[in-house]
Length: 147
Image (cartoon, rainbow, N blue to C red):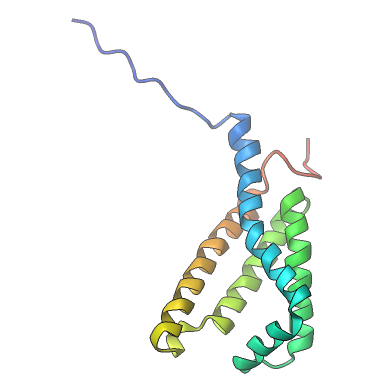
């Protein structure tokens, strides 16, 4: 009797798909929530300010402006891959602060607590993706990539 044939190996480690397409799709997907956030600030500034005020946040106008810049510039960096590591890390820190300040479910009760816990945990997942980009870079398909 002969030994069974080895199982086919699915090695994607050197594949252009893994190092090009997958990271690009990941950057697109992570960017989606920040595009929505930036557009929400542009089209609904006063609503955003009211929401922040309801959480007793001070210095709303400058903080909202900073948030808009982080989201808009961050999305451009993630989508193009240019300076994506720095942008992802800044967005990671920003989203952490936003999560603690605006989705503090531990200080709420009822349905409000449940909904905010979901938003908080969703943000933690996005932060994980941002941290992966900060650590490992944007992948092959990016502007400013070293040859």
